[in-house]
Length: 437
Image 1 (tube, rainbow, N blue to C red):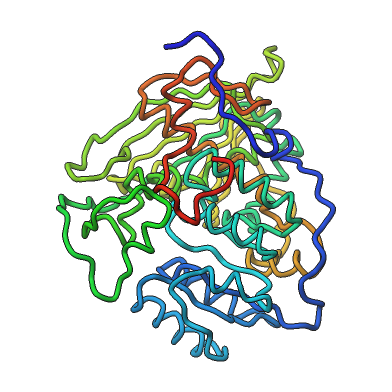
Image 2 (image 1 turned 135 degrees about the vertical axis):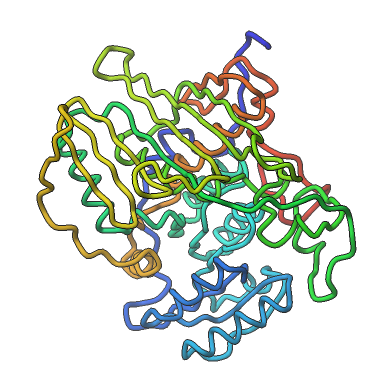
C-alpha cells in the first residue's frame, strides 16, 4: 500500500459543492398551464412503474418510450395508451429523444451503467432529468453528473423516493428536533430473500434485443442469459450489487437521520459470497461501517452501519428493510412501509407527537420543481452523497480493507488499488463515455 495521498482527478464540484451547490433555479421548461413533454429511457420493471406514475400526472405527456428491447418498449407504448396518453414515439436509441427540442424532461430508468452517462447527456441537451437510483455506476460518474446539473441549471431528481415520503420526513424531523437526544449511530438494514442467478455461458442475444446498444459505453462482454435483464445488478460492469440496488434507499434515510452531509472519513467492511454459489460478483452478505469524526471530540463523532443479507427473509425488527437510530436519550426503529417505534434510554416506549404531512409523491415533486424553478426534494447533490456510500462500501469489501477518505477533496488516501475503483474503464471511443473520465 502506498503512503502517498492517492486522489481522483476532479472535473466538477468537490464534496461541499456537491451537497450544497449554489443553485439559482432553472428557468421553467413549461408554464403552469403548459404540457410537460417527457421521454422515458428504459422500459423494464422500474421504467414501467415510473411510466404509470408520470402518465397519471396532470399536464404531463409521455412523448417517447425508449429501450433496446423491442418487446419492452412495445409494452411501454401500450401501457402509456392504457393510461390515457397519446401514442408515444417508440425508439431504441435515446439520442433521438435528446435531439427533439420539444422534449422538456427525461426519466432515466436504465441499468446502472447507463444512469450517469444518459443523465449527463440529457442535462447537456437542456433536459430536466429524473434519474433512478443509484444515480451513478461509480463514484467518478457521480461527480460528473453533479457538475453537469450545475452547469446546465437543469432540475435533476434522484430516485430515492423516501425524500418525498411524509411519514419518513416526519420521523427524521423528530430525530433532528432531539427526540432521542444526539443521534450517534444510524443503522441501515437490507435483509431480504433473492434468488441466485445460476451459472451461465456466452450465447446469442434474442432477436428482439439490441445487445450492443444495451452494453453501451461499458466494456463489451459477450451476451449471457444471466447477465442482462435484472440480473445485470450483480455484475461489476453493469450493476452496483444490492448495496446500490435496495441498500441505497436505507442508506439515504440513515444519513438523513444522522444529519451528516459529507462523505465519511473511514469505511471498513467485511463481506462476500457466503451462500450463493453462482455467477454473482457482488457480495450476498455485507457489513459496512462508515465513520464521521466531526472534530474528533466526544459528542461529535458519529457512525453509520450497513447490514445486508440477500439470502435471508429474517426480519429483525418486524421488517426486511429499514433503519434504527441510536441517540443519547433513546432509540428509534423506522421503516418507510409505516413502522415507527421510539424508546427512551431505559427501553420504555415513548409517545410520538405530531402528524406526518401529506407530500407530493416523488414524480409530482419533480414536475413541481421544474414548473416552480426550485430544487427537488432529492436533488442530485444530495443523491450523490448517499450513492457514494454504496460505492465506497463496495470498494472496501472488494479490496478487503479499510479505506481512509479525505471528505473535502473526495480522495481516498494511501491506497492506489482502491482509488482506481472510484472510476471505470469504457469501451474505446463510445459516444456516451462521459467527458472528464
